[in-house]
Image 1: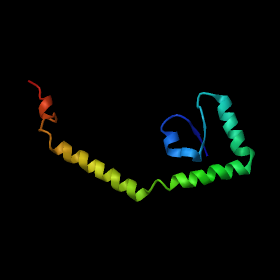
Image 2 (image 1 turned 45 degrees about the vertical axis):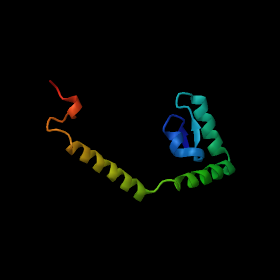
Image 3 (image 1 turned 180 degrees about the vertical axis):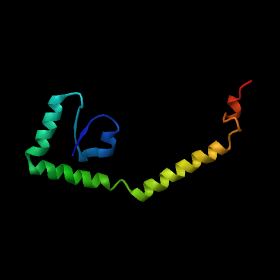
Image 4 (image 1 turned 120 degrees about the vertical axis):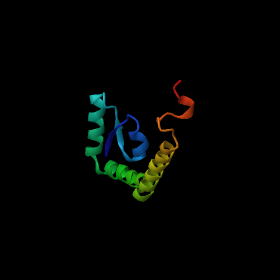
Length: 91
């Protein structure tokens, strides 16, 4: 339950992860020691991770992804045969 603090990881992990800078070995060591050093902290982070995971749903993600792909496909179909939008037409 460790992650770098580089985006987008904090957005996904929320409070459910212990973060460190991937460029600072001392931060990595401290985060590892904290997670491995005590069960209480592990349970705390684990509970937060479980709550964060409830924000994500595979079915909803799959439907949203498919809808976006289809919208992009429909948009592409509306372009001229050249593939350029009418405002981008070459002289």
